[in-house]
Image (cartoon, rainbow, N blue to C red; front, side, top):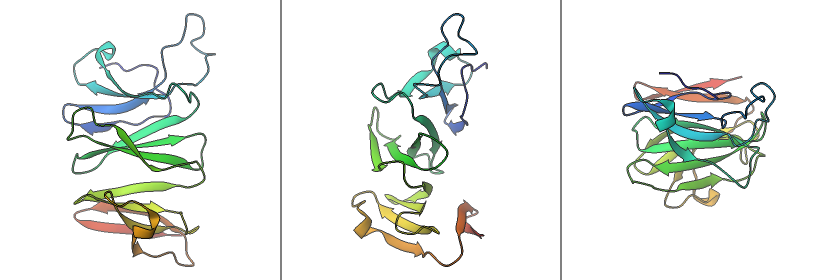
Length: 176
């Protein structure tokens, strides 16, 4: 399979294909000089031509943010991050079990970094710097996502909680 116009993306596998981000095709003569705008999320079915890829998300009102996505390990949610640069991003999620479900904004603005580590029983574990400059791990109930309802799983300490990953039903925590 050939996928073009990809820059600043990964591939997040789902069913018989993957989600990825790309820019619109460049206009004739602008292949190497076009602006990096309207970075959008697509789904590519393996074996299909790229022209058949399904547009999942495009923000026509805000052309500058780049969009990155991942699928939760249980294939329930598509997580999308919208970034203007290298620090801070908005975070959205989309229920993949519901046809044409909307993206729901979980974190607004570009001042913080929030990463969904995993989903279980309608709750996300999120590695976040909101209220914790050295990061913490919190559980966010999607039915009650306001910060006053967060459950602290790993509190902020004097050491930077650099990352939290998962594997084999365990969390791996890295401090700096």
